[in-house]
Length: 119
Image 1 (cartoon, helix red, strand yellow):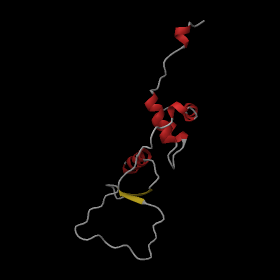
Image 2 (image 1 turned 90 degrees about the horizontal axis):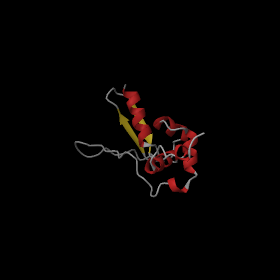
Image 3 (image 1 turned 180 degrees about the vertical axis):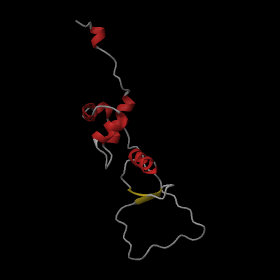
């Protein structure tokens, strides 16, 4: 039989890490299984943290890329009939592949995807 000291252990994960994963799992376009696979934490554990008020993100965290494009002269004009329904970012990788991402995509996921496509 285990003693009380052996049964009661500290958490394997820090509270800040739990908040981070809860925040990531609530981001648009991200699922708990995606976050689970990315960090090696069981999905069931992340689901339990999502329902615990102690691990809710305190403030909205901004984890997004800021698109920057440098022009030698004046910026080209968009066609007058172009309608932008949502902000999109287009990333051209060194190998010529292009990745088009919507403004709600998780930055960590986009980075992993870009690394995979660049390989």
